[in-house]
Image (cartoon, rainbow, N blue to C red; front, top):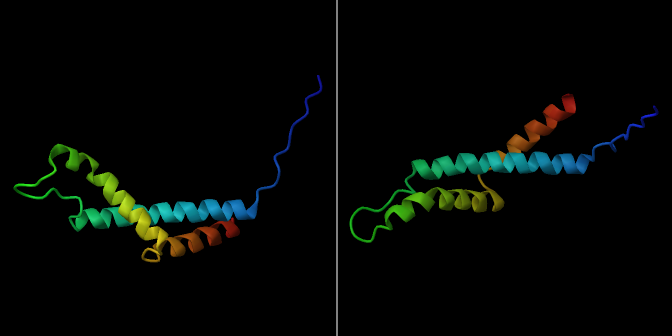
Length: 93
């Protein structure tokens, strides 16, 4: 029985950098989401005019989207630091 193994092409460094950058941006967005939550962005308003249960359920989605937009606009620089560290770690391995 003759079995031929297909070898995968070598990994593309640009694709790996893109994946690392995306992971770093997602981590920064998660940190910013938590910061926005701690600042009370998703808290329901008291009294009249409250959005009710729907607002409570979807506030986390709104905070996450705000965080992603902040990261796309440059964020707080955390994703670039994370990307650099991940790239150095991948290079050392």
